[in-house]
Length: 339
Image 1 (cartoon, rainbow, N blue to C red):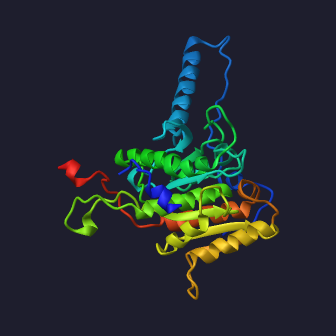
Image 2: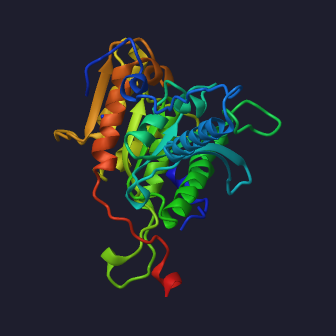
Image 3: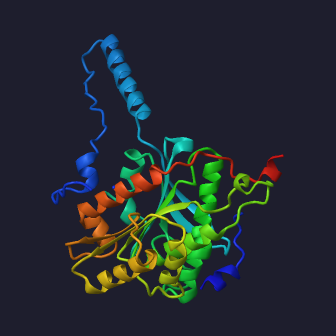
């Protein structure tokens, strides 16, 4: 698989008490709304009417000023001329902002799973300060394949080569604008997209820095930005991708990985154990790699959306290993271009 990827030129050089009665954001996020009093002006003197109008306008201005962080719907053009749809949750932390890429799972999965009321995208942005990109991988949601709906082997490979590349290029643009720190990057993926996340991380960590300094440590990086992975109900048989082989390569990078699965689903539990073994060297304890088993009989996106503990664990993990990762913002353009 890696040989296939190398043959293509890439153009870009959280534990808490379980509460079943309410989703994560409903319990933690209090609405920030203003109640505007309504006055009838009929029969009032013009002066009072003017005062009422002034108060209404002032409260509207206050509501606008306290409006939450920005959310943007975008289309990214990939290197193979495919339009990839994303939702971008912009952080207010600017150059200190950690980044989370959220990849859906399932044949009918899409980025709205993450951005809806039960998703964690808004929570990560507003409470965690993350810049968040929720992606519709090709053939899913609004990223519609031309003239067909069935996915082929090369489509999954192109998710790694082109879809994730386009997202990385977008993050680079936002990084250079000072809107985030792309070197503090985590990826959350479910079922089939766990293989996409693993393969992309493998490639990202093999990317050589610019040859723009005689001192290797001072060279400007072009990759090695993915600092942590969350893999929910991992699938090891995604067409065209070799998850366990990518995991074996990532093992040498000492990256934190959280694997989550239902203990009631024998197939998912077996795959999760196999992936865990591939990520952890034999006879070596690795606290950065964890396998979490959940009692609910859900898988993939359903496990994230329906199980509050899963949401807590994801948020805590990203907060510790991505937001807590020490990496000051730096210019990512080559020194040769700056001079």
